[in-house]
Amino acid sequence: MKIGILGAGNMGGTLGRLWAEAGHDILFGVRDPHSAKARRLSDAAGFEPRFGSFAAAAAHGETVLAAVPWEATEGVLRQAGDLSGKVLIDCTNPILPDLSGLAIGHTTSAAEEIARWAPHAHVVKCFNTVGAGALSDARYGDHSASVFVCSDHPLAKETASQLAESLGFEPIDAGPLIEARYIEPLALLWIHLAIRGKFGSKIAVKLLRR
Image 1: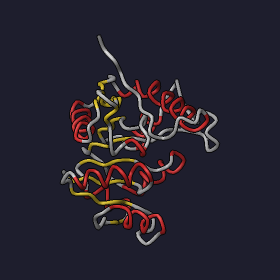
Image 2 (image 1 turned 60 degrees about the horizontal axis):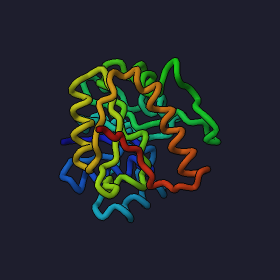
Image 3 (image 1 turned 45 degrees about the vertical axis):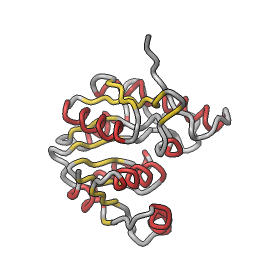
Image 4 (image 1 turned 180 degrees about the horizontal axis):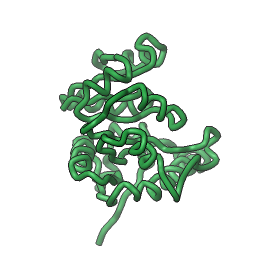
């Protein structure tokens, strides 16, 4: 699969590396391909990542991952250009800079705002409740960590679920995109536990069934 990744930080860089290792064709979209962040990813990736503009990454991908800080997301999507018909995976969280709460929530969500900014893309929420530190190993004893997937587009759900499963996660169909209003606050709880609760960045959520 051709995947364009908007951003090369912890989430975008790690997911891009793992998907490249799985055989996907990855192009990272960044502001500056020669930046320190791009160099760090190149040093850590174990492969030679390819970088381009946000527009180049969006044009490259059948699937596009939005993995930039929330406050930059609208501007990056505008730079990315036409995303019509593409699966757009949103792993962002609309967290305030000091991590004290959500910038938006409950009456809308980051995913719904992204769908408004990219109205012809097939937006799907996924990977926002797991930290980059857990992406390389989704197994916790006998269990695989869960990730919640919500979208109004069946193909987008299927694509995100397959990419999650390929990394060992259990994708949970959480319904239509509006459910992101409840999934995103869960990410805030994850941040609180990981940082203020000092559980660390490798904790994960699991949905258990009887």
